[in-house]
Amino acid sequence: MLSSRVISTLNPVLVVSQGLRWAGIIPPYHDTHPYQVQVFSRDPLVLHVDSFLSSDEIAHVLKISEGKYETSSVYSSDDVSVNLKARVSESAIVPRDDVVRRIEKRAARLMGWRGNHTHLQPLKVQRYGVGGFYTFHYDWDGLVDDGNRATTFMIYLVADCTGGGTNFPRLPMPEDTRWCSVIECEEGRDGYEGVTFKPVSGSAVYWENIYPNGTLHPGVRHASLPVKSGVKVGLNIWSWDDAWRKPEEVDA
Image (spheres, rainbow, N blue to C red):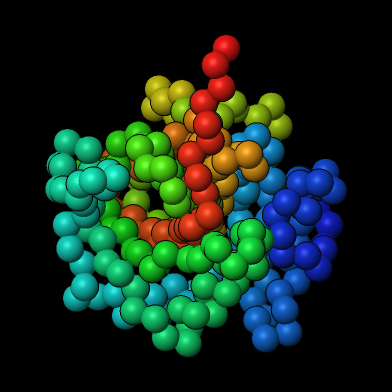
């Protein structure tokens, strides 16, 4: 394991500024669940979070989502449609209760707020069976002028599968082989470029979609790779920045 240091902050920007690669997080007094943040990349900011959810929280989210799944859609700024060439999965909006609110607060504190113009979108569970996938895409929308997804939390709830990793083709592979505990290394990359995070139940991948100046980050293009066997279930937590405006283009 890479060197670890326990810190009291829940803002990933401060984790990065301190130059830490691994940091144990002490939650506030009202949230006693511990987890560990690993800084994978600083540009774009990508974190891997070990044990972000407890087994009881995972079981609860899965239970309250049952019966609510629908065929997943593909979204654009002016259209919502089912496109089985781009995405094969089932999605469910997670009903809000005390457990879900606790998860939301935990995620919001780690994300670090950008003022009262940022809020969480409804939590959504994604279920992938054999052959399920989501082709390469961005979570930000480049066709809108105001408001956009600022950050993404992708949490693995069920990882009883082969395949199904989360691939970032524009992230460079790290030289430190200790990262191979959470990413696919040579024998498991299946010809994909970049970095593929392994599905591990309870763990999460967090990334920032937008540069501080408002520019949409091209480095966070990603895909949910096809599930070869078994089932994968993920939980998405997105933050939306109402104050975001498309930066003006500057002539060269």
